[in-house]
Image (cartoon, rainbow, N blue to C red; front, top):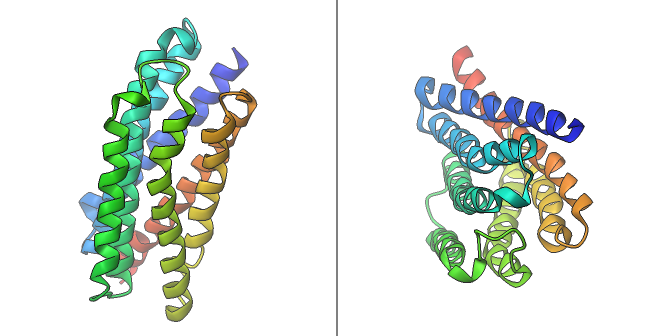
Length: 222
């Protein structure tokens, strides 16, 4: 019961924040950059709700294993929405720093996104089972991790060049999100306590959304 209470309170606060902040930025943003940040945040909240709501239900009722199918479907949807999340973040980078060239990088991000989603669609993932194959958990996260590395590098380069106070910590936030997420992929099946790393991973995403919120606040003062 304590786990159910703690997780539910945390998840409700997180989902409400992501959805409200995202929709506010998307609807009230007066430039494409803010609207993209809003879309990214709203997608984050909407996608994660497919996993977190069934998880809360499972914790309050018959347990996680008994609700494996619902949790698996939610995890599948979240895997796809998170891929799109980073693709949008890439376009935020292009808009923020007025990147006109580097078409090969755009192609690479799209190829990695499509590959990641294609891997998620394979039946070998066994999404509806409680104990899913580690091999496909690793395989589908390889293109995702490469996307993350690209995002970290390109933001690190441009924030330094532009002395960007809004996104200067974006590389760190993305690095932390992956740093907390990858051990869960690799070891949570044998060490369930590792799953607790999803909390700081989620907080890293909250930090990313807050950076987008700074853009929204700036437009209101201009």
